[in-house]
Image (cartoon, rainbow over all chains, first blue to last red; front, side):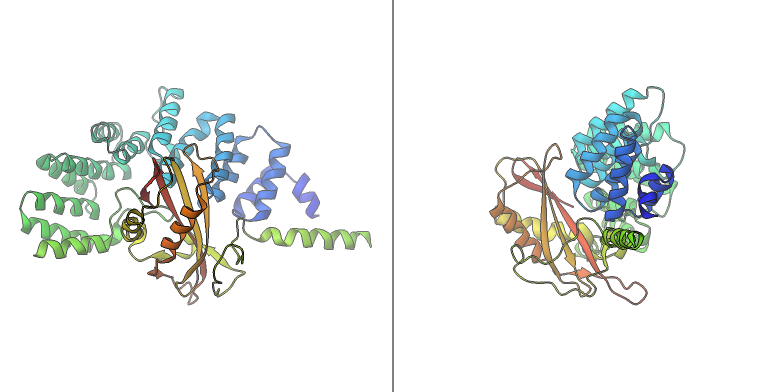
Length: 245
Length: 158
């Protein structure tokens, strides 16, 4: 019965079983058998890679993901770019994947793993400290998209870059735009506090920190990775102490 | 008779397959000391258990990057990543550290073992872990930390 299932049962059933048992040795065995029987099926390589990358074994994970991309670039480049950005902070690697995907899909606004490609490129440029390119990418994201989750953090990132560049008034506009999109954005209040401190407006700085602290449970967070613009309660509290003096 | 032998054989072959890939267990060749586990048959992944460092990855970076820089733990002029994976037991103690090393092309590579060991020693000093109660039970968890190397220097920890 087991032998029948492993080798001869319907391949979709086996694929779903393997995906469901993600991270187990059985799952990997099922994927190996499925690959042997269906070597051109890129989804098998993609699905098999997931556990390795989630466990931090990126050589094995990306070896499989690279095979998936080779077999079907349009299908898997976005995900690979996403993984390079979020799991490895390999900003140049991710940008290369996003740019290639974009060139393969000329009239389509890609969404690697559900996030807008310009937003993700913006994060890559932020990681590279290439603020001018980051600003362009996030602005493009805002211009292209209707209101949505990514837009909030496009405004937050814009606000952060303008702050880094010393454009405090522009930064305040961007961060307030984030709050207009969603008032439960503790990151916006946190960076507003920093901007106001830089402008010597301590009272406003402290007000914004309090707001950030109140809303901290709404912060942008991911079970697998730290976001590049992630904030932490202890950081908010440390700034509160610093600005109190 | 053949059926029974076949069934038993396949079951014995199949059972360990329910185990997770890339397990870590005490190895006297590699580990200086054992780590007491609450349940060696159920070690969760970090994202399932919610086990984390207090203050998250940022706190880990703030705590150990200065130490790494002070000790000048460097890797020639390489570019790549080192991932240190280990177990956080149910009591918030860590051990059984393992290093996975990749280059800029995300391919497996080997950095200096001395430097890897030094890095592991620094990671071992992290002692502010938070283990969640999952229906009144605390579990052992796998956790890992990534180190980005640029021209030999560790530039990011996440």
